[in-house]
Length: 292
Ligand code: G1P
Image (tube, rainbow, N blue to C red; front, side, top):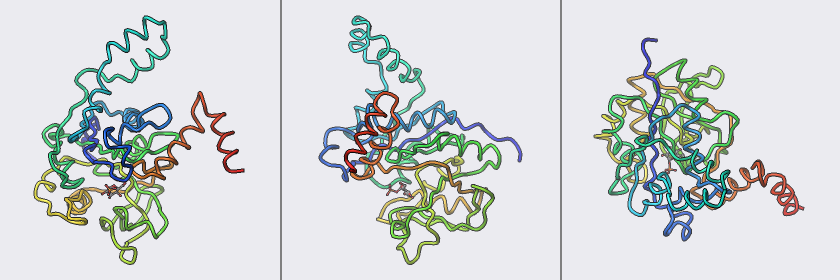
């Protein structure tokens, strides 16, 4: 299999407006909406860390300053927590603060699509393989979704995308793969297509928003023409890369929640609340009362 570079970097595109959950996202980045007591984005960073990611590249846009501040130290707050002896809360905050120099922020000045957003990170990615995590999507699983993919990557190398079966009437909202053959959770593909009409979808396996890609994708993205929705699509560039490099889909174990939509966000809050170490038992009792 040859030498394989360790996966150290991840790109998180966070420039989107969050129009589906307005007005909540008018002044707060959608990635910062709380799922119980942590911003949605913190779950995604935790998922990536569990997979061994050491450097995060955020592709940001206007009105996303709260994200950078969130990953900075908050001296007044930390001082006052220590002063009041609230060591547990202080320690938890401290543990979430990234090591200096491990986060980069690049700007996508105009909304030209996911493919363009990823391309904006090219200088920081350089010649390294990298992960992409779309922070709208939270995946709840025992072993983190990206960590499962890294296990597969360490076996087969190349490029890997997470996929998951959805009801047929949902396929037109996603990138969809054409499976060829399967070895356990690993799937060989003959193609992939972005937001196909239901009648033209090659399967019901949707691309979930977790990717491990080789840096050559950046060269393809550079000249990638606009596709579905008039946007530069990552899926179109991956379909090209598939003709040149090893490329697998991986059916991960876990449940995904689309926090970019009202109902998906609500479901995520329920799912994480019911297993929360502090409020889990109460939340479960409450959910039962609502469904009675
Ligand atoms: C993006 C990708 C799509 C993927 C989806 C997962 O679409 O383009 O292939 O299936 O994320 O959530 P978006 O949701 O940005 O329209």
